[in-house]
Length: 178
Length: 178
Image (cartoon, rainbow over all chains, first blue to last red; front, side, top):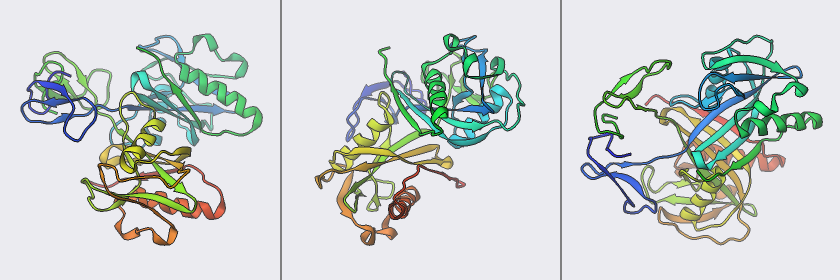
């Protein structure tokens, strides 16, 4: 950030009075521009003993498999965002069963929240951001072609938890030097 | 948002190609400036049968009672943010027990995540953003002087759940026309 989005003047990095972290502060209108983590909301949609995955048609990780998920938008709830992303990427309507994973990914300032979801009927399609969408049983999951560590974690949790019949919300931290 | 934070040119509100919502887009460098909800992280700290509350020394709701909570910062986990806010506002070190409430507050683009937390010893103080910090048992809670609906909800959930000995994570939506 170099310029103030309110008045167009230059910003400088400084610790505002009463604060304890450097912020981008406008040298003209004194607006403080806070930067905070974003929420990525999504689903682990299940139909019978199979899980719905999408093959990414966008970067990053073009061509790799993922669960439907994306940035939560202003004006929506986390649950709404999770269902919307599933509709957009997999053309599927799901019922959310529970919050399943909460992953803080500190090096990219994201919190990913995935819901376990029920796909009542095997009705889905290929959304604009997907190359393919398909149902996979445990033996078919393309483990070596998954897009993100968070997706791998969620799928591993799911197949473990299904054996025990208990699905606790999992809290995960991912840290990596950029 | 009126100006591009990257180059200082004017932004215009338009739907970028491949998107379906209006965004602030720079007319000069084409940067798309996304705006997304923020996470407010905090704790419901418990010591014995009492709950720790802080009386706000800042607006909004100056003088009203709240649970320690505030905006999650870049580079931290949700849990880290919850403990940090408790340290800053109540000078208290807590152990997080579980995620307890997840509230989407759509009219202010916030998601509040409160953790049930254990205050091992009754050691706390008055942080810079607080006027008073104190432990309250159920009969002493200042219900008419609570700062926010989310705080009232969390306290009501807690005293109900304590009677049953079960503390499920509660998912709440708050919508209000601005």
